[in-house]
Length: 279
Image 1 (spheres, helix red, strand yellow):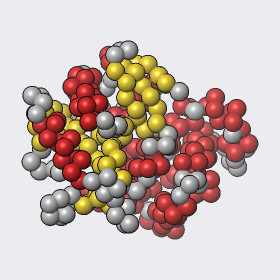
Image 2 (tube, helix red, strand yellow; image 1 turned 60 degrees about the vertical axis):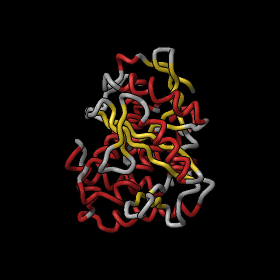
Image 3 (cartoon, one colour; image 1 turned 90 degrees about the horizontal axis):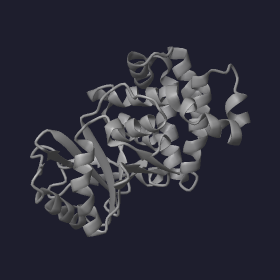
């Protein structure tokens, strides 16, 4: 389904201007990108008349490339734009008007068997890109001001990427856990009509019904569909969840969600139990 949104509804006033300048670069090179992370979450929530609660100061996009030379070509094109510069400290980061951050995460043919990318030339900087191919299967097309179009990852795709990112960097903060908790709390509300029509039994007939647990059930169904063609990646994601379930009250993920969202610990635990069953 395609959506329309006014730039006045976007969380950050620079976002539309940045996209106006950036999109022609990718069109020229014939490379598609899709928006991930907090900006994707914010736009989806706004499309459904909801607010995310935490304003983001950046935009993250993902691109599929076969060789690092393709990324270098993109980098060279972007830094020729007058309002963009490369961040000297972050391999994936560009700065727009010196302050607004643009992160470009490549995946595809450059990904190793361990689901990582290693940035040239010395390969000292690595990122995990597990789940990006699955997230790309479920994109939402959004038209802004009837003048430009972007693809953004769905909430289910965001949850997958956030779970993987949390595994990599949870020791640095609770932002990823916060986002996962937020998605769990809002998932049923966003997809209520589809849940009732397409997945009533799986969602509304769960034991000890709450809207949050029902949302977890629907989220699990949706993630399972995205992972249906890749049992290996499904097992990797389930392993992350199962490790936290086994940790119980010592789960770092559950406690970080508890710190950042209005939800009880037992409900968090139940949600991930349901997720694990549905995926």
